Length: 393
Image 1 (tube, one colour):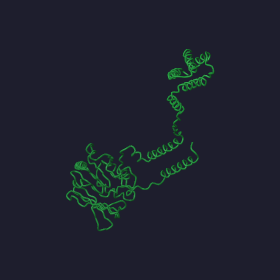
Image 2: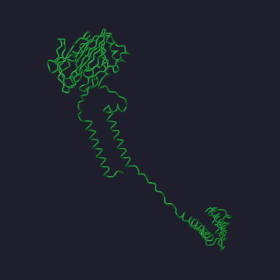
Image 3: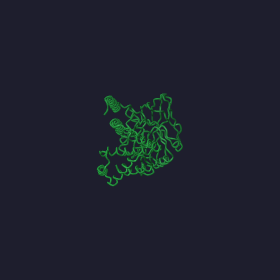
Image 4: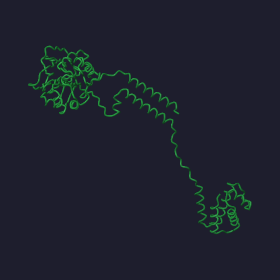
């Protein structure tokens, strides 16, 4: 059982851990300002609102969320004619296979809409466009405008944005659609273009923050709708694969730790195991130390004394001591008197020891014979030792 001091310490520790767990569960969560752009994230730079409203923007068009690599999707799927593939993320780096399939897709009369600060060198080389990004920490307030005078945009973007504009475009196949005005009125930079490809087009836009929850819920929804109005399609494919906030689960434990309920269940389970081990360790019997028993030195002593007598060849004294020892064992074990070693004694010893009467008689008679001799030889000692050893006491 635990003593009072240990019990108090465990109670205090348990209470402290319980309070910490409660504080962690119920404390206000700080806003997560990381760029996500996923349709499931409700954080400021997620795209939950955009995905929920996109059907209304396209008058009930079918919207399909694509969670596969665009190369695999376009290669394996039978996509609808006059459709649009929408990519929105802070940075998009397409590989050569993806660019080839997207170019083929656009050439067949479809639209590829890409809103990102950067598109990678492969897209730039294929479509002859180059972007320039100003990573100044002290961001300007960006005011996007359209060359189409029918669109009036009063939106402003500052928090979490970087000024990304087109530095180089293919003038033969490119139509300028929009531009950015920074805080300095004289600076105007191209940020929205259409690049014709076969029967279709690529739409490149450099302000993906316009489609995030934060800006859509703060009076900038009109600008996002006007940007997407250049898409005229009945089927919309929404990319959910090339996203900064896409969750990649590579192990069961990583999945557990990314889910709040599973994570706290795991932590509480580990805490329970620790408490169980503490109590179990206190209640288990301590290991009993193996104590080596003391050696019976009397046997060694007797052997030493016997060797000493034998070396001096005092056979008479040794025979006398062996007879004395034998008779002492008979007295202590069988409670027989050894004063008179007669026939009555022989009969009782034979019965109690379980030895045959003739064997018992020979031993006692030999003892009487030796007790009657004054001088003894080595052969007498050997014979006595043999007879006593063969006699079962």
